Amino acid sequence: MNSQFAIFTLFSLLIINGYAESWPKTFDAPQAKYEETELEGFFKYTTKSYIIFSDQKIDAGSIARITTVAESVNVAMSLFPIMIQKNIGDNNKSSHIIRLYSNKSEYLKSGATKGTVGYFDGRSREVKIDLEYLLSDKRKDSNLNQKHRFRVLVHELVHQSMGQQFYALPTWLREGIAEYFSATHYSAGRYNFTMATQLIKDQIQYLCNLQNKDVLKVPSLRLITMMSSNDWDKDTIMNKDRAYTKYASSLLLCHYLIELSSRKFKGMKIFLDASWNDHSHFQIKRNKKPRVDQSILWGDKNVSKIEFQILQYWKSKGLNIKFINPYKSK
Image (tube, rainbow, N blue to C red):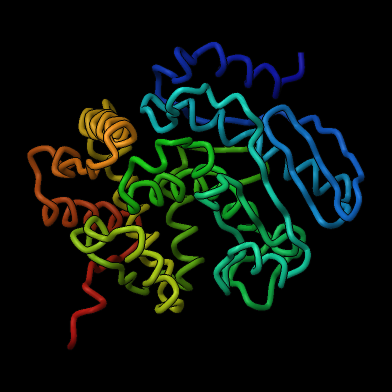
């Protein structure tokens, strides 16, 4: 039996009702199978769970990696004993759609924000990616190189794989979860959760252009946990030079909640369930605005205490952090 298939099968057997009971260590996805179809003006690549549209033919090696990454995300997420994938009424059986654009102007016309290389379209539930970013070693207008080229794809696919749970969660949490998986994904379809600390540190240092002794200045937890989706998007557009720091804060907080606070996920489990129940009720009762108290996540601690614990933990790992309010006048 192929070793990768054996690993995939083992993890699949551990999944109960779509979610594992034990903490995952690593995951190596088997190489995805796909069919290529040439249509008028574009190419279609069909896998077990995805339909990928591209306006240019993609070489065999690249599409093999892209399809393997795509098929890996849903399984990697289901290995965690927390309910981060949910849908109302359906079982998420329909194929997910990914659109790849070789033409930058067409990518922007799709609804992309200038300066980005990929995004999850919440209305169509499609992932849209600048193809050059996936194929090139480095883009002139992006601070991402080949080492990180699949991380945006993973990030956006996590959003897509969340299903309607995506809409039930506060912005910082869904972004932090997506960053957690994108950081622990280190090669096409391969994840190492036991190395999460080092992989997260590497990602933050790289994307924030930090040297080993530099201090990472990120928005305070109180600030990011209060940001609406609109606030988040506006800040990304208006403050492009420090846009990633919000994601860094969210990643650090999610890492704390997932790995440092409690491996039993009590607060996280309760909050996810409460958010989903509230969202489901909102879907039925349109006049109700979903709102769940985030203090469920903190347990017997306050945000200031959590910030201190995060600072101390990462300082011991060689990453110096300072939580700030970037909007506060000096």
